[in-house]
Image (cartoon, rainbow, N blue to C red):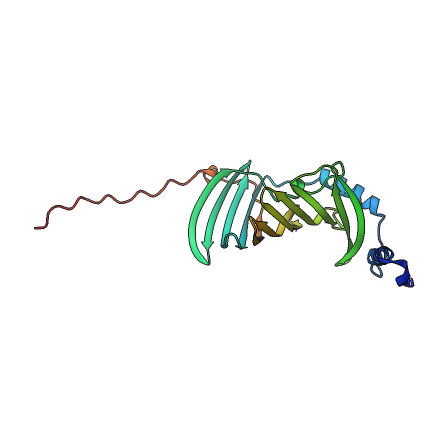
Length: 242
């Protein structure tokens, strides 16, 4: 049994902060903590071996309050760099709007995960997650960028990111938030994203929740064909009243 280190106020603020980090880094009872550099090495390997679905179907709900107020639910069919986005409800009312476009997955873990060649990783702590430990790292970019990952939590079973925290600074936009991931079937998919932003001086909050994933082996070509607008019925010109 390990005794907790004593904190002497005479040590100063920095010493107290370091002691708190040490306490936070201690693994929960009964779980074995792996060396933090070994975890990073396994993370790099896991990203290299990451499976990407060829086709994926899912729903997402987006809510925004602030600069714009939005409440929408969408159903998406994606494959071969093409995407069919069906808006199925707006402000709780059912609708049917379809957009077919060329699009990539902006929230894929392979796109947002910090890489060791672009970031430094500083181990912060472990956190219990079910029957295993997750590993939390502070990340610092080697070069400045509008989008910056500030922290990543690595799942202690797959060594893939379960949470990526970020900041954004571009033009008049300042934002921070996170994207959460989990294993769905054989893939590592986004499940929740939140962001708080200042857009031209106006506070704005956004939340996106993904659900109902499926991974078909194919999708019919008609999936990615933009529906033709419905033709309006022809109306005979009205003549003079009888």
